[in-house]
Image (cartoon, rainbow, N blue to C red):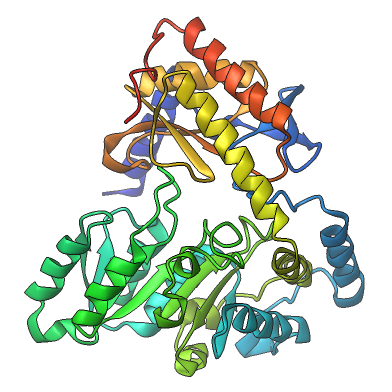
Length: 404
């Protein structure tokens, strides 16, 4: 395909979104008011689609830590750690991640996307075998492709299908890599990690779990679905991001294999990307310490989850999964989803509009992410806005066909 044809293809996609008045790329948060509110198109708007699960982005402590780092360490690192050396704050944060998870090794990356890209391309080579959940994040698919490894999807959250895939690999299953997520970001469903690990161990493979959306949310200490499932010490690699519960920007990997540190010499995304700014590192470090010492944040979050999930269920909405901080409302078509999404915006509520190919299984979704920072009144406002938006559209009943 020529570049001009690619531009034409993208213009067609943009035009289709504009015709439906459903282009999320046009949303501009003109002024941030708090962790859960912003001004959009001059209107005070509740943010219910920003993945700010613990609501920490405006906490005085995180702002103070970031400001101090800015003043003492400057605005950026201006190079990679392999070229320019490491700041002491990077090393300290890696040590804290290792301690938090009870693992001997940790690496941090400039984004969560790069964490998956960096680990997969650092671990894998052409001819290696990888089996990934079919609903895996784009960064996992891209990391597998860039590594040159042979990768095979297994049916979403299906341990038996994973067993079939590994069995077909024969002797190559031993030493293969299995990749899954803890909490899936589109439908809000969690992986059956204990069952998936049992299958992985049966074949002598390794398990990697992306806990990007579950850090700080699941587990007694907030260490994710792996902790909640009681298998944390048996997972080989855990990746995640700073940009959800930690309210910053960056990514990480921890491992029960101390040899993880050797990837610093073979992971191109780590070697050739400027390291995270001191501000991002300081904010993430403060947030990590904060969630360890404030379990009440998770209690508040789960109270809000129950309130939103229950309210939408009472409206008759078809919801994507069991209660989780990601509450996805299934809608019958893209057009219907766009109409309701615009009605919600007009009512001062921002949620994510998710349509194919970004959504799994061809679904059209209105995706909400719940925050510990939401007040009960804000949750109730979101539910009321959904009810009114549904009734005002010509597609009343579009997402009110009963619980899935």
